Length: 170
Image (tube, rainbow, N blue to C red; front, side, top):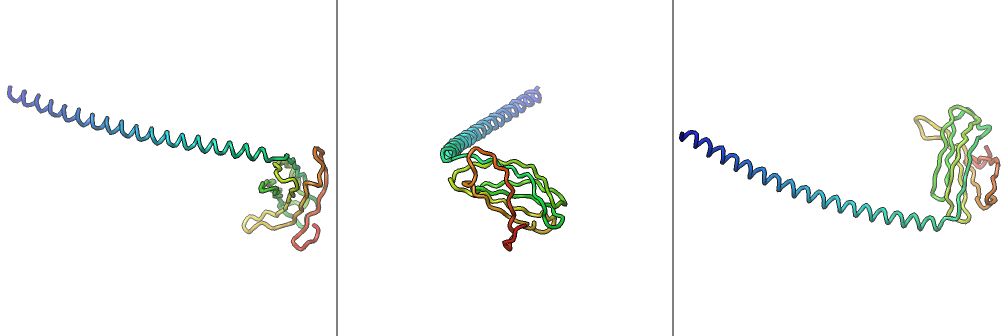
């Protein structure tokens, strides 16, 4: 009988120790959950503040806008040698790029872009490059278009000459 009583006492002690360990683990888990909840809440507040700041910045920028410019880059003709050309357009820190058309002197891009205008007299820079797989892309030519020369609300269908680095038309 004593062996059975001893066994019960040992089981009771083990059970008490296990319960105590489990209680400590639950307390640690609860503390960890509270810490994570506090971190989550702090991050949520920071994101809300960032969202509010960006919304205010966007609103301020929208109030400064004076218009939109829609640009269609249709094609180029008579490029020297077979090229793989693409265009890069810059307007007031905005950049757009056409796709590369492989091995042609007369690429057809048929690309359309929209720029937001803040400056009353901006210029659109259009630069054409020849794509090179290994080396740096080769400059073919560039043209600058004064936006103030365009009529507001009208479509303008115009060809522009590319000027090479040496100042010659291409």
